[in-house]
Length: 308
Image (cartoon, rainbow, N blue to C red; front, side):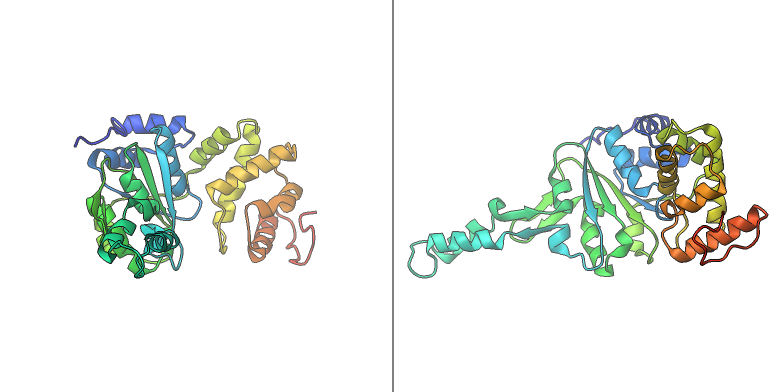
Protein backbone atom coordinates (compact mmCIF):
# COMPACT_ATOMS: atom_id res chain seq x y z
CA UNK A 1 0.00 0.00 0.00
CA UNK A 2 1.42 3.37 -1.02
CA UNK A 3 1.94 5.88 1.73
CA UNK A 4 -0.55 8.75 1.71
CA UNK A 5 0.93 12.08 0.63
CA UNK A 6 0.49 14.28 3.67
CA UNK A 7 3.20 16.78 2.70
CA UNK A 8 5.49 16.68 -0.33
CA UNK A 9 8.44 18.28 1.48
CA UNK A 10 9.33 20.21 4.66
CA UNK A 11 8.81 23.50 2.80
CA UNK A 12 5.38 22.30 1.68
CA UNK A 13 4.53 21.49 5.29
CA UNK A 14 5.78 24.92 6.40
CA UNK A 15 3.61 26.67 3.80
CA UNK A 16 0.46 24.63 4.31
CA UNK A 17 0.62 24.70 8.11
CA UNK A 18 1.16 28.46 7.92
CA UNK A 19 -1.93 28.79 5.73
CA UNK A 20 -4.00 27.28 8.55
CA UNK A 21 -2.66 29.87 11.01
CA UNK A 22 -0.04 27.60 12.60
CA UNK A 23 3.38 29.26 12.34
CA UNK A 24 5.80 26.35 12.43
CA UNK A 25 9.58 26.60 12.42
CA UNK A 26 11.78 24.51 10.13
CA UNK A 27 12.26 21.71 12.68
CA UNK A 28 8.50 21.37 13.22
CA UNK A 29 7.79 21.43 9.49
CA UNK A 30 10.45 18.77 8.89
CA UNK A 31 8.94 16.48 11.53
CA UNK A 32 5.48 17.00 10.01
CA UNK A 33 6.80 15.95 6.60
CA UNK A 34 8.71 12.94 7.95
CA UNK A 35 5.77 11.71 10.02
CA UNK A 36 3.72 11.41 6.84
CA UNK A 37 6.51 10.13 4.61
CA UNK A 38 7.75 7.49 7.08
CA UNK A 39 4.30 6.74 8.54
CA UNK A 40 5.64 7.14 12.06
CA UNK A 41 3.87 8.71 15.05
CA UNK A 42 5.14 12.02 16.43
CA UNK A 43 5.70 12.51 20.16
CA UNK A 44 5.62 16.21 21.04
CA UNK A 45 6.74 17.39 24.47
CA UNK A 46 7.00 20.86 25.95
CA UNK A 47 5.30 23.27 28.35
CA UNK A 48 1.52 23.51 28.31
CA UNK A 49 0.13 25.92 25.76
CA UNK A 50 3.02 26.04 23.27
CA UNK A 51 1.05 24.53 20.38
CA UNK A 52 1.37 20.76 20.80
CA UNK A 53 -2.33 19.98 20.42
CA UNK A 54 -2.73 22.72 17.85
CA UNK A 55 -0.07 21.02 15.72
CA UNK A 56 -2.34 18.00 15.23
CA UNK A 57 -5.31 20.23 14.46
CA UNK A 58 -3.26 22.20 11.95
CA UNK A 59 -2.12 19.03 10.17
CA UNK A 60 -5.74 17.92 9.93
CA UNK A 61 -6.78 21.27 8.48
CA UNK A 62 -3.84 21.41 6.08
CA UNK A 63 -4.51 17.89 4.76
CA UNK A 64 -8.31 18.17 4.85
CA UNK A 65 -8.33 15.16 7.17
CA UNK A 66 -10.63 14.09 9.99
CA UNK A 67 -9.28 14.66 13.52
CA UNK A 68 -9.88 11.77 15.95
CA UNK A 69 -8.90 12.70 19.49
CA UNK A 70 -8.16 10.51 22.49
CA UNK A 71 -8.01 12.77 25.53
CA UNK A 72 -5.91 10.97 28.12
CA UNK A 73 -6.53 11.10 31.85
CA UNK A 74 -5.74 9.09 34.96
CA UNK A 75 -7.87 5.95 34.96
CA UNK A 76 -8.24 5.72 31.17
CA UNK A 77 -8.76 2.07 30.23
CA UNK A 78 -9.15 -0.15 27.19
CA UNK A 79 -12.91 0.34 27.03
CA UNK A 80 -12.47 4.10 26.59
CA UNK A 81 -9.38 4.01 24.39
CA UNK A 82 -9.88 1.02 22.07
CA UNK A 83 -13.36 -0.51 22.08
CA UNK A 84 -16.03 -2.11 24.20
CA UNK A 85 -19.05 -4.30 23.60
CA UNK A 86 -22.60 -3.00 23.79
CA UNK A 87 -23.63 -5.29 26.64
CA UNK A 88 -27.20 -4.00 26.90
CA UNK A 89 -27.82 -4.65 23.23
CA UNK A 90 -26.20 -8.07 23.49
CA UNK A 91 -28.47 -8.97 26.40
CA UNK A 92 -31.55 -7.91 24.49
CA UNK A 93 -30.52 -10.04 21.54
CA UNK A 94 -29.94 -13.04 23.79
CA UNK A 95 -33.35 -12.61 25.36
CA UNK A 96 -34.99 -12.20 21.98
CA UNK A 97 -33.32 -15.35 20.68
CA UNK A 98 -34.52 -17.32 23.69
CA UNK A 99 -31.20 -18.90 24.45
CA UNK A 100 -32.05 -19.49 28.09
CA UNK A 101 -33.56 -22.86 27.28
CA UNK A 102 -36.83 -21.92 25.59
CA UNK A 103 -35.51 -21.15 22.10
CA UNK A 104 -34.05 -23.20 19.32
CA UNK A 105 -30.83 -21.19 18.86
CA UNK A 106 -27.75 -22.76 20.45
CA UNK A 107 -25.45 -20.79 22.72
CA UNK A 108 -22.59 -21.16 20.23
CA UNK A 109 -24.72 -19.60 17.49
CA UNK A 110 -25.84 -16.81 19.80
CA UNK A 111 -22.24 -16.17 20.92
CA UNK A 112 -21.04 -15.76 17.36
CA UNK A 113 -23.89 -13.40 16.63
CA UNK A 114 -23.64 -11.10 19.62
CA UNK A 115 -19.88 -10.68 19.24
CA UNK A 116 -20.21 -9.22 15.78
CA UNK A 117 -19.80 -5.78 14.24
CA UNK A 118 -23.32 -4.74 15.19
CA UNK A 119 -22.46 -4.86 18.88
CA UNK A 120 -18.96 -3.34 18.77
CA UNK A 121 -18.58 0.19 20.15
CA UNK A 122 -15.51 1.73 18.54
CA UNK A 123 -13.42 4.15 20.63
CA UNK A 124 -10.83 6.64 19.29
CA UNK A 125 -7.91 4.24 18.64
CA UNK A 126 -10.02 1.69 16.80
CA UNK A 127 -11.99 4.41 15.01
CA UNK A 128 -8.80 5.95 13.61
CA UNK A 129 -7.46 2.55 12.53
CA UNK A 130 -10.65 1.64 10.65
CA UNK A 131 -11.15 4.89 8.75
CA UNK A 132 -10.47 4.78 5.02
CA UNK A 133 -10.28 8.56 4.65
CA UNK A 134 -7.26 10.69 5.71
CA UNK A 135 -7.22 10.77 9.50
CA UNK A 136 -5.15 12.51 12.16
CA UNK A 137 -5.14 10.60 15.45
CA UNK A 138 -4.37 12.88 18.40
CA UNK A 139 -3.44 11.09 21.63
CA UNK A 140 -3.46 14.14 23.88
CA UNK A 141 -1.58 14.43 27.19
CA UNK A 142 -0.46 10.80 27.15
CA UNK A 143 1.66 11.43 30.26
CA UNK A 144 -1.53 11.74 32.35
CA UNK A 145 -2.43 8.07 31.86
CA UNK A 146 -1.27 5.12 33.91
CA UNK A 147 1.80 3.25 32.71
CA UNK A 148 -0.35 0.25 31.80
CA UNK A 149 -2.15 2.26 29.11
CA UNK A 150 1.08 2.58 27.16
CA UNK A 151 0.84 -1.15 26.50
CA UNK A 152 -2.46 -0.55 24.71
CA UNK A 153 -0.75 1.97 22.46
CA UNK A 154 2.19 -0.16 21.36
CA UNK A 155 0.25 -2.28 18.88
CA UNK A 156 -1.28 0.82 17.33
CA UNK A 157 1.99 2.76 17.21
CA UNK A 158 4.12 -0.05 15.80
CA UNK A 159 1.80 -2.03 13.54
CA UNK A 160 -1.20 0.27 13.09
CA UNK A 161 -3.57 -2.49 14.08
CA UNK A 162 -5.90 -3.42 16.93
CA UNK A 163 -6.64 -6.96 18.10
CA UNK A 164 -10.19 -7.75 19.17
CA UNK A 165 -10.12 -11.33 20.51
CA UNK A 166 -13.66 -12.11 19.34
CA UNK A 167 -13.10 -10.70 15.84
CA UNK A 168 -9.38 -11.02 15.24
CA UNK A 169 -6.82 -8.41 14.21
CA UNK A 170 -8.09 -5.27 12.51
CA UNK A 171 -5.39 -3.63 10.41
CA UNK A 172 -5.39 -0.07 9.16
CA UNK A 173 -6.56 0.28 5.59
CA UNK A 174 -5.06 3.75 5.50
CA UNK A 175 -2.61 4.61 8.24
CA UNK A 176 -3.50 7.69 10.27
CA UNK A 177 -1.14 10.54 11.00
CA UNK A 178 -0.52 9.99 14.73
CA UNK A 179 0.41 12.76 17.18
CA UNK A 180 1.07 12.12 20.87
CA UNK A 181 1.44 15.10 23.19
CA UNK A 182 3.02 15.18 26.63
CA UNK A 183 3.63 17.87 29.24
CA UNK A 184 6.29 15.59 30.77
CA UNK A 185 4.31 15.04 33.98
CA UNK A 186 5.98 11.63 34.00
CA UNK A 187 8.61 9.91 31.89
CA UNK A 188 7.17 7.84 29.06
CA UNK A 189 8.49 4.34 28.43
CA UNK A 190 11.33 3.78 26.00
CA UNK A 191 9.07 1.37 24.09
CA UNK A 192 6.70 4.22 23.22
CA UNK A 193 9.49 6.68 22.46
CA UNK A 194 11.27 4.20 20.20
CA UNK A 195 8.24 4.00 17.93
CA UNK A 196 7.93 7.77 17.50
CA UNK A 197 9.63 10.72 15.96
CA UNK A 198 10.38 13.28 18.67
CA UNK A 199 9.71 17.00 18.71
CA UNK A 200 10.18 19.41 21.60
CA UNK A 201 8.26 22.67 21.45
CA UNK A 202 9.26 25.51 23.74
CA UNK A 203 8.18 29.10 24.13
CA UNK A 204 8.95 30.99 20.93
CA UNK A 205 11.36 33.86 20.50
CA UNK A 206 9.98 37.37 20.97
CA UNK A 207 9.89 38.02 17.23
CA UNK A 208 8.04 34.78 16.49
CA UNK A 209 5.58 35.35 19.32
CA UNK A 210 4.83 38.82 17.97
CA UNK A 211 4.19 37.22 14.59
CA UNK A 212 1.88 34.62 16.14
CA UNK A 213 -0.11 37.18 18.11
CA UNK A 214 -0.39 39.45 15.09
CA UNK A 215 -1.55 36.54 12.92
CA UNK A 216 -4.33 35.66 15.37
CA UNK A 217 -5.24 39.23 16.41
CA UNK A 218 -4.36 41.40 13.39
CA UNK A 219 -6.43 44.34 14.61
CA UNK A 220 -4.17 44.94 17.63
CA UNK A 221 -1.65 47.75 17.16
CA UNK A 222 1.91 46.49 16.58
CA UNK A 223 3.23 48.64 19.39
CA UNK A 224 0.79 47.10 21.86
CA UNK A 225 1.71 43.63 20.58
CA UNK A 226 5.36 44.40 21.32
CA UNK A 227 4.44 45.58 24.84
CA UNK A 228 2.38 42.46 25.46
CA UNK A 229 5.11 40.07 24.30
CA UNK A 230 7.67 41.90 26.43
CA UNK A 231 5.50 41.61 29.55
CA UNK A 232 4.78 37.94 28.89
CA UNK A 233 8.51 37.29 28.51
CA UNK A 234 9.19 38.93 31.87
CA UNK A 235 6.41 36.89 33.48
CA UNK A 236 7.99 33.67 32.19
CA UNK A 237 11.24 34.60 33.91
CA UNK A 238 9.52 34.61 37.31
CA UNK A 239 9.18 31.55 39.55
CA UNK A 240 5.50 30.88 38.84
CA UNK A 241 3.31 27.82 39.28
CA UNK A 242 2.20 28.17 35.67
CA UNK A 243 3.94 30.50 33.25
CA UNK A 244 1.77 32.08 30.55
CA UNK A 245 1.64 30.16 27.28
CA UNK A 246 1.34 31.31 23.69
CA UNK A 247 -2.39 30.63 23.83
CA UNK A 248 -2.66 32.98 26.80
CA UNK A 249 -0.69 35.66 24.95
CA UNK A 250 -3.28 35.47 22.16
CA UNK A 251 -6.11 35.57 24.71
CA UNK A 252 -4.55 38.66 26.29
CA UNK A 253 -4.36 40.34 22.90
CA UNK A 254 -8.02 39.60 22.28
CA UNK A 255 -8.82 40.96 25.74
CA UNK A 256 -7.14 44.25 24.89
CA UNK A 257 -9.21 44.49 21.71
CA UNK A 258 -12.40 43.82 23.68
CA UNK A 259 -11.44 46.54 26.18
CA UNK A 260 -10.36 48.89 23.37
CA UNK A 261 -7.08 49.38 25.23
CA UNK A 262 -4.66 51.55 23.32
CA UNK A 263 -1.68 50.60 25.48
CA UNK A 264 -0.64 47.96 27.98
CA UNK A 265 0.00 50.20 30.96
CA UNK A 266 0.22 49.20 34.63
CA UNK A 267 -3.49 49.71 35.27
CA UNK A 268 -4.47 47.54 32.29
CA UNK A 269 -2.04 44.81 33.33
CA UNK A 270 -3.48 44.85 36.83
CA UNK A 271 -7.06 44.63 35.59
CA UNK A 272 -6.42 41.81 33.10
CA UNK A 273 -3.72 39.75 34.80
CA UNK A 274 -6.19 36.92 35.34
CA UNK A 275 -6.22 36.29 31.61
CA UNK A 276 -2.62 35.06 31.66
CA UNK A 277 -2.00 33.95 35.26
CA UNK A 278 -4.43 31.49 36.86
CA UNK A 279 -3.00 31.24 40.40
CA UNK A 280 -3.40 34.02 42.94
CA UNK A 281 0.16 33.47 44.20
CA UNK A 282 1.43 33.95 40.64
CA UNK A 283 -0.58 37.15 40.27
CA UNK A 284 0.75 38.50 43.58
CA UNK A 285 4.34 37.74 42.58
CA UNK A 286 3.86 39.28 39.14
CA UNK A 287 2.39 42.46 40.62
CA UNK A 288 5.33 42.83 42.97
CA UNK A 289 7.98 42.08 40.39
CA UNK A 290 6.51 44.14 37.58
CA UNK A 291 6.04 47.08 39.96
CA UNK A 292 9.72 46.83 40.85
CA UNK A 293 10.67 46.62 37.18
CA UNK A 294 8.90 49.90 36.48
CA UNK A 295 10.70 51.60 39.34
CA UNK A 296 7.71 51.93 41.64
CA UNK A 297 7.44 50.92 45.29
CA UNK A 298 6.81 47.33 46.31
CA UNK A 299 3.05 46.79 46.19
CA UNK A 300 1.14 45.11 48.96
CA UNK A 301 -0.21 41.69 48.03
CA UNK A 302 -3.48 42.63 49.71
CA UNK A 303 -3.98 45.76 47.65
CA UNK A 304 -6.89 45.55 45.23
CA UNK A 305 -5.11 47.74 42.69
CA UNK A 306 -1.37 47.65 43.39
CA UNK A 307 -0.45 49.40 40.14
CA UNK A 308 -2.57 52.46 40.86
